[in-house]
Image (cartoon, rainbow over all chains, first blue to last red; front, side):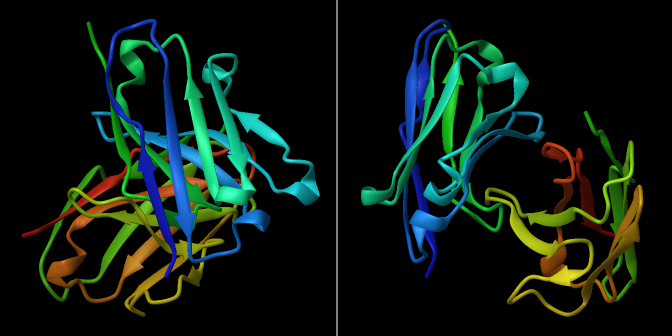
Length: 115
Length: 106
């Protein structure tokens, strides 16, 4: 059974940082292209970042508006993907999901940015 | 950037109805479109990939069609468990979701 479990969300003040983790099982993580997507309080879904697999040199792409603030990474030995978020803004408040090739999703982790 | 416009934003229908949801892209997306179902409190679930391919385990009452800029998700006979919000998603150029269609029971 494919499982993705996000952790690391919480309440953070504007300007601070947070690192999300996504632990996976049930599929061959090392060949999977992994993504982070968020859903705003208004229910809008927004793709944030993608990291490809080793055969594609772990190529990374970002939504333009988060480039320079968010960093995606992966650890194939732990079947996990991460999202480092810096200089957080109130508009980053959302549920953050990790997905395997957009076919399998975790349950999400809530990030609230507020003073 | 490619914009995805879904219509209607809210749809009320009765059990057994044939339901059609629309998604229009701002430019040709070459059938690179998926449909997702999201029930309250849950993560989105993939229903249809590459316009008309049914994801494993999804009931056959769901189907997709379209080409160019215009795409459709059809539920042939609405069931109570189909109450959800449905999102289209393009991956032809970048990745963009539509705003969703909320499907309710009449």
